[in-house]
Length: 294
Length: 308
Image (cartoon, rainbow over the protein chains, first blue to last red):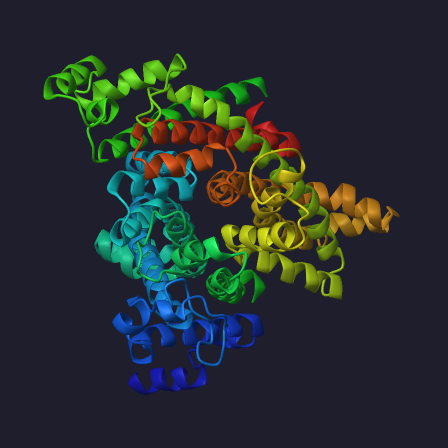
């Protein structure tokens, strides 16, 4: 028996779905460009402390060097307090990325569990969860986040809380509809028949089989989250000074836009490129994961 | 059809109740005593207590909510802590500015996006298609407030064509409407293109062409009408984005609309004003969603048949 099955596995080599998707993704130049940009960005933000010292280069003011246009010494110029803008943008990437990733992760976990439970059990529970998400979806996401910040006060932690909460209903919806597509399939019934617990069925049988759209949406949501993080900080409702969040940098640079436009241009460009990279990757993943296009 | 409209209108009620309830509860968490804020620094403890009693702030929160909703139905949204004037007056005097700006941005973006999407799909993989899709991709990725600032820099400060801020005459609409509408245009164009690409490959389009329907008619009459549903969905979602985006655009352009009022009220901890702005915006958003749903039934006979 052992021999035959190993013969068979030699003959029909199993290609892992991850590898299959990756091979499709590698052929998509735009998505790869996005992925490479993101890897570089994450690398830079992880090594931010090695590149620039936070206290002496990012926060400490140096009035004698204020408002210098980009030069060899300061590649991105300096801000109104004489701080190097490159150092601030690099350290800012850490804030913008971590706030967005943590918010998306939190809303994915909470929304995912709600959606999976709602889709799997159906009935009254499903009805209740879905009516509640309806209510939250009736509030534009930015406004929802703003109201929560307004109530809790502006800080980085509250920003993460409000951004996460504002995206929970969307994830609940996405996961629920994904779960519904595989709930009635035979292997789920089989798992139930051999006595698998509900939790096992949901987490080891259902979710792995509907992970595609969830991954795609998560990537695109991180992009939206970066925009929202920057937007709320721009309004003064997010990360507070002197922390160099990108939206906050833009908001500070805005006062000097007439004569020192690089202060507005560079942080905005950083935000845009990051969102663009995430969108390219998200689109590429969608094409690679969509069985209709294979 | 009338039945459908009535049913959808009725379904709006629990949503509005839920939204107002949630926002009301969240705003209860906001620090600060309403009575103290209204009376100012010099008030004595007795005065504060008296006003608390008068305003019903000592009642259970749920009673306060019911009272708020009853007053809301009468058009009373409470008194602002900052200006001491009725919230409703302020919100409704600002509302037309936000409404007009959103409408202009929405209409312009839809009028530009749909032809762009159709042309890109019909001329798939040509130079035009690539260019318009690159523009859309950039548009989707550009933060609204950054685009707004760049527009101000280029067209107001450098060229002096349009005012930097304020709402005075048609010229002042141009830049805010572009920055607000650009992202919408981009996503609507992308969706129109992909749904057109799907429909133009359908058999009935080939049949129509084989019967001798001119290409233009086949595209405009047969393909476009069928590709319209995803486009409408995106337009609906985007209109919601307009309301969220208006907060940022209005801040950049010092536009006297609800979005800016809300940001200012959050900074000055003016709870009734924030609540009023939120409630009015979410009600608008729900009504827009309702209109989008009605539009579905209007363009898609299959959906219409479900409700007749």
